[in-house]
Length: 368
Image (cartoon, rainbow, N blue to C red; front, side, top):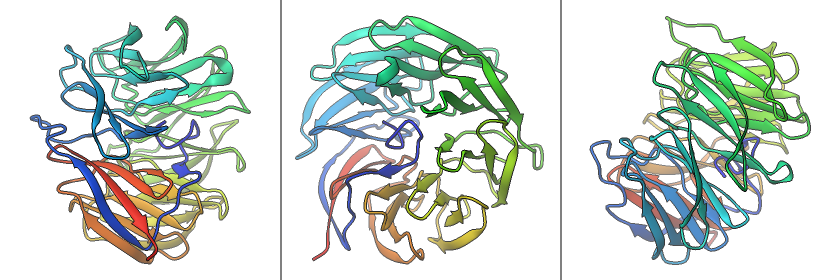
């Protein structure tokens, strides 16, 4: 699932990132279109990597060597697929720029069901198996949108709630509190009741130079009762889950495109900035712990290793970076051929990531 879980924490349990990195395989010309970038992120389930492309393809490749298991083409998605799949049990769920959420058979790619609402889905679905529900955000032609809850087995709509502007943001969920969070292109953050869709609260973020659009996905921190989101205002904002009240703000400058990551062991929030800095903040207060400059814009959402030692992300210089979570020290960086906007998928000692000019890469790390 995008960002590893429904909270969208970016914390990849069970993964480790070593002190050295090697390129294991590459699928070249994976996504060469006029858009020329994979905006979504790969997801790994079992021994298969799943990813969508701007060409409207959904690809399943073997994690071991990159060989294609299956692929399907979505014919009517003018801008293809910008989100990441959610793979749960035997089904792959993915949205596309034809306004449709697809449920595909995991082993073959055969379509189980599809539901079209609006004209575009630029986000990544989230699935809660205990509720047998998949949540997705959909954009409408008039500039507004919906957050929709679907039955995972049939695709029937359980509820849908409107947003004032396009919800390009993916939903994030606090299962214990049964709340669904999303942002929209007018800078509104919403909390919906996960069972009924009723609006729990709506918070309009402050605008800076007229900008407050939310393109990234919120990160839910249940232990702190917070939901953290970045906006085009250049601010990272932490809101109280129950009331929507602002708990802290951190001003960064620049339009924030990616999502944050959260490391529970140290209660640290990580964010990449268009100024080329990766920052670490105290999750409770928003105070800066450290920052590290890489000299290239960061739109990729950072991912955290399961041992809590490493944060991994891509940048506009075509490199993937690994930093120590403790102090921001650079461990290594490696070139993957072009601008990286997607988030890395960390699985065991492997890193899977997409880059501009159409490549899907598998990297392997080691300590010796």
